[in-house]
Every structure is written in structure tokens, then in C-alpha cells.
Amino acid sequence: MSTFIQTLFVGLRLGSIYALVALGYTMVYGIIRLINFAHGDFIMVGGYTMIFTVPAVLALGLPAWAAVIAAIAVCALVGMGTELIAYRPVRKKGTKMTALITAIAMSLLLENLAQAIPAIGPNPKVASQIFTAGGISFAGVTLEYTTLLTIVISAIVMVVLFQFTQRTKLGRAMRCVSEDKEAATLMGINVNHTILATFAIGSGLAAVAALMYMAQYPKIYTTMGSLLGLKAFVSAVLGGIGIIPGAVLGGIVIGLVESFTTSYVSSSMADAFVFLILIVVLVLKPAGILGKNVGEKV
Amino acid sequence: MLEIKDLNVFYGAIHALKGISLTVGDGELVSLIGANGAGKTTTLHTISGLLHAASGSITLDGKDLQKVPANTIINLGLAHVPEGRHVFARMTVEENLRMGAYILKDQKKVSENLEKVYAHFPRLKERYKQLAGTLSGGEQQMLATGRALMTDPKIVLMDEPSMGLSPLLVKEIFAIIEELHRSGITILLVEQNAKMALAVSDRAYVLETGTISMEGRAADLAADDRVRKAYLGA
Image (tube, rainbow over all chains, first blue to last red; front, side, top):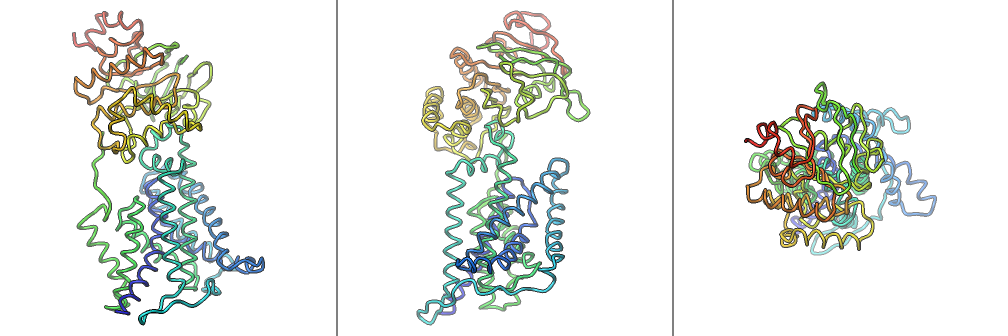
């Protein structure tokens, strides 16, 4: 029983991180129908930003996690830059396929560019402890504070984000642009600004994910976002890409599958199971768990 | 109010509008009729800034519409009900109407206009919580029209409002257009249903492969032999 509870929480923690990253994929996909392969690398950008800003933050007398604010800002800027420099021009002239290939190129560019920066280089860096260690124990189960914190923070972020899209002017504009850019323009919505804001928010979430990820795995390297990003992408597709609650659900499912496979089957099977689940779900329900295959009304 | 002069628009290599000129005066209901592919929708899209003209001018009360970004044209008092309704399918009826008032800052004004639109379209009020994508074609047309009225526009462009609707609903939609016209709103109407369009309009233009072939009082055009043969099936 204690193994089960432990595994459950490990899965929820991992799933929360996937969910945060998946939200970024799903928001961008929702608004411009592009799978932003560079999104996983924004986590790396956030990770390094925190590595470099933690000393300054501590010198200011602030707790180490406050470095996430700098990471959010840098990730948002990198996300907006990616849209402005690469995606927007390609969207104007190219096809969906050109845009997709640009996204893959952007991902490799970020990874290699980071490695070329002398202060980063090819060797991994280890982050100093960000949150105080410790946890609570009950019934033979030990839950680290960071586990609970990760789950709670992710849950809060998701609720806030969902309310944001439902209730705020920018959130509603984002929903309109995602549905119909022409009609959104006729309503007076600046489509390009709205897309840019979506990139800023989605990329900022990657920085939050980076913080939660580093609290568990403090090793930072330039390709750290590849597999993490891929699994988060799988989460988004699994839940139904373009749907915010779908990204959350998909992330939690993938996190649980991974942790239960590791505990009860074999840790080497965990990733295989994740992708197996993806294939099974897509065969049974191509639009994802929450997705609907709705025909467009003309 | 709206004045178009010598407008040329290209779709890639296709010369879609070949120097058309037209005017819509204050409070007028003017329709633009013609066959499929004549350039009617292109004309409206160019007015709204969704398409760019190669040459020519479009002015609204003397202001050059081609000099302002498409999403700010609604601020000048021009609303556009697009072809195929283009309602936001995953939003509710009321959310759609509120999006129509996106540019308004005064929430009291938004609520007032919402009530006005509901008074015009009681059916929308009954269904205010329903997702727009689940409405019937006629209801979606009402929603798209109501959404365009949310900013109290001076002029409304309506693109094929009767498209895909049953004859009964077509009558209903045209009754609404007449009602809006009577309430003082200036309307530029694009229609394939020339008979209905000419019956409600003050004036009309006939568009043929990118050029205006005829223009005049709607009643005169409806009586013209060439129009009757080509567009009224008489």
C-alpha cells in the first residue's frame, strides 16, 4: 500500500511537470496549428537562466526560487522572438510543412546555440538546492515538500490559466483567434499581438516547469528539453491537442503510467509504455481523450 | 458615407476587381449583385482590410480605410457580417455577442447593446448559453448579424446573408435587413439572391467578372430586361 501511494505521488508530480509543458504546446497549437518543437528547449533556456541568476537572487536576500521570475521573463522573450523571427515570416509565405520544419530547426538551433555559449558549454551543470529539503511521513510513506509543492503549483497555474482564457479580454481574444482569425480581425482583435501573447504565456509556463523539474533533477544540459518536451507533446496529443484541460489530463496520465511502470514493471520499460499508450489511444480515439472530431460547419 | 474609386484587386495572377467604383450614402441600403466569382466578396474583404488593393481608394466619411490596419476599421464604425457567418463555434451565443463589442471599453454600453440585439433577435436571447456551433444556419446568421451590431456601427457590410437558408428563413433574414435599414443603419448588401436583394434595396450595382456592368435604383434594375434575364430568371 505504501509503495502504491508513493508511486501515485511520484506520478502526479511528474505528470504535473508534463502538464505544464504540455500547456505550452497546446496553447500554441490551438492558436496557429503549429507544433512548436522548440518548446521543449524553452525549458532548457529557463533552466540555465535560473542557474545564472540564482547567485544574484540570493545576493539580493531573496529565496533561490525567485530566480524563476527571471526565467519566466527570458523564456517569454525567447518564445516571442521565435515567433517573430521564424514562425511569423514562414507562416506568411510557406505551407504548414515548412512551418513544422522551421520548428524542428528552431529546436536544434536553440540547443546548439546554447552549447556555443562559453558559460554553458557541452558539460551538464548541477543546480544548487532550490527548495528546502524535507517532507512529511505518514503510514510508511514519505512525501517530499517539493512533491507536494510541484503538484499544488501546477494545479494553481492550470486553474488560473483556464480562468484567464474564459474571463479576461486577452484570454477571450486568444480563443477567438484560435477559432477564426478572419472573424477575430473583424471584431477588432489584433491577431498578431494575440499570437505573440500566447507565445509569451506558453513559454513562461516552460520556465515554471523548469523550476519544478530542477527541484527534482538538478542536472541541466542543453538537450534536457528534448525527451521532456517529447513526452509533454505526447501528453498534449493524448489529452486532445489544442484543449487546455486535455493537456493537463494527458500530462497526469503520462506521469502516472511512467511512475507505475517504473515501480511495478521495470524502469527501462517506462518510456516504451508511454509511447505505447500514445499509439493505443490514437488508434482508438485519433483526436485524443477529450478531443472531438467535429466536422466544420460551412 | 462609403466611397470606392477605381479599385483594382488581384488574387495572385487573377485580376479580381478591375477598377470598380461605388458609393453608399448615409442611411442607404445598397446591394451588390452578381454571379459566383464576380468579385462581390472580394469587394467586401477589401473594404474591411482583409485583402489589399493594388490601386484605387476606399474612404469612409472621408477617411482612407486602406491606411489603417484591418482590425481597427471597426473603430471607424464599419462592421462586417462575413459570408458563411463565421460565428465562434466553441463560444456561447452571449460570448459571441460580447466579442462583437470587443473594442468597447464601457461595460454599461456593452450591456445596453446586448439588450438591444436581444430585442431584435429574441431567438438569440432564448439560446444565450448555447454554443454557437450548435445553432441552426438561420440562427447563426442572426448571431453573426447581432454580433456586428454590438458596436452601434454606422455602416454594416453583409455578405450573402441568405446563403444556405430555407426559403422561409431567407424571408425572415430579409425582414431583419429591412428592419435594420428602417432603424437608420447604412447597409451594403452582397447577395446572389438578386430578387430579394433588389426588393429591399434603395440602389444596386451589378458586378460581372470584376467590373460593374450596371447600376441604378433597385426598382429600375429589377425592371430591366437584361437584369431580369441574367439574374432574376425571368
